[in-house]
Amino acid sequence: MAKNKTVLARGEIEELPGAAKTHFLNDNAQRTNKSLGDVTGLTGFGFHLIEVQPGRESTEYHRHYHEDECTYVLSGSGVVTIGDEQHVIGPGDFIAYPKGGDAHTMSATGDKPLICIVVGERLAHDVGDYPRKGKRIYRQAGLPWNLVDIDAIETPEGGRK
Image 1: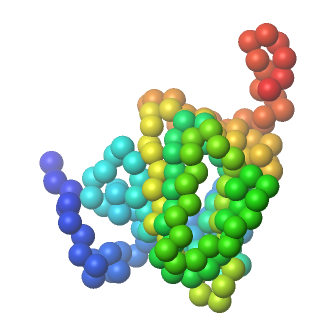
Image 2: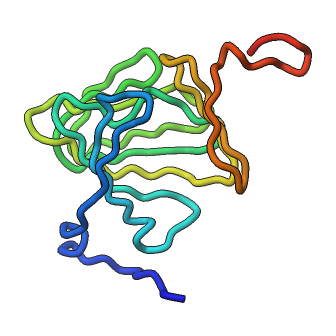
């Protein structure tokens, strides 16, 4: 079995092509993603170097119930929306998205790309909501992600979520 590389030099990171990603629920949420954790064999959390072009969002507005996430801004400028609040962000800013916290997203607002480090847990199970879309996504160990309409979720007592 091939062993993953544990040290990536700056030049190697710069040469990584990155993956162009568009969120499946938001065509304006487009970013280039270099998953440095995947390249080096990390499995307990994701460690990504992302680039968001001006006028684009990083992801669809969402929240996780079981996984913590965080972002560190390397360059560029943007706005992070957390719950109903918006914050201007720039180089050196750190943003925490605690599990069970408010929904969030980032957008690049300057004339240069917003470049950030994004870190998030990778648990065997997670549940997340996309409140603006009325959707819930969840996964259980060994099974693929599932997406449902929040309005269609029933509680064991027969009520609606």
